[in-house]
Image (cartoon, rainbow, N blue to C red; front, side, top):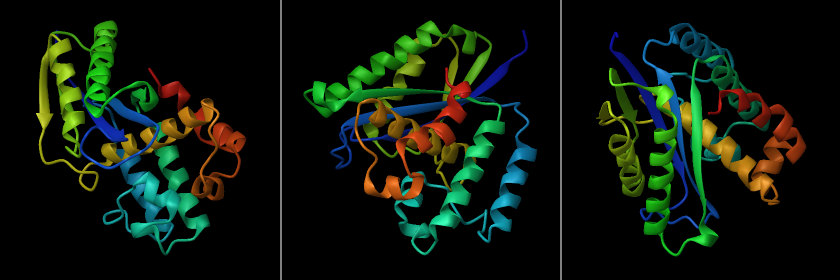
Length: 230
């Protein structure tokens, strides 16, 4: 059997013991894509679309939360412009040959950040144990994570401990240098909002201004990426 490389792109939300974040949920998102996926054309189309909107696709790093809240590099952008950027990323995700899975913990039911980390690591190990179709002994798993939280890096150790194939942790990657980490950020944000809505929580003020109603968010955003979820 020919060797194969499966890339895994990681993003997180919440406090895993390294940041101050009082959010109810902690989430780790894994985006899976075969290294041979033909994304060059989609990357070019996405960059061209961003350029036509008046933004620089080289310097603009897509980061969902600041875009929704109109912060940082998006602070001077109108709601209309930010919405167009958001939907361009949604289109890129829908067209891309990728799959994803999100692991989440409700922090109300854990005693510490350390317990959050250990619980999510076990969930990740269980997932890889149950989804052997993703890889085989001839597969190399390349894991891309910007190292933002040490707790998440510990969770990701569960991949090596669960898989019979080679696992390589890529070093020095950032959202600015890796488009697929921007994709992982987008999916993590969308799924986290969906999780909060499922729990009966309301959109916050920034999300209301950006998306409108929960029903609109469900119909126009969340529903359109469900086919990519493992």
